[in-house]
Image 1: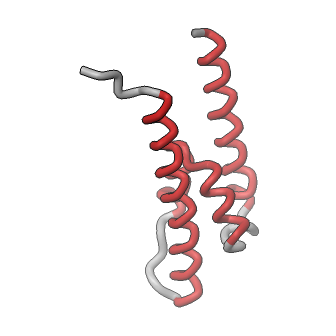
Image 2: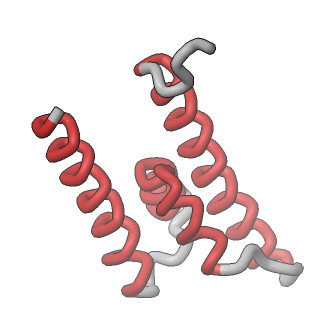
Length: 94
């Protein structure tokens, strides 16, 4: 069986999860404007925790969504920083 965790596959995953996080911010902003059912905040954080930090932050600023909620303004970048630091440490150890 081929190795699933190749650099190519990881990059594809990261592009997809970041697009999903970006689109989730867009959809939630549109639903907020229309007064419709919203995406749970925990779902938005989960997308960022799964590697969608760049997409989540880009969506937050592009659509001016959740920019007044400190848990998003601080939380999204903090999660991204922790993930990057952990990745660098993992790469350096191996």
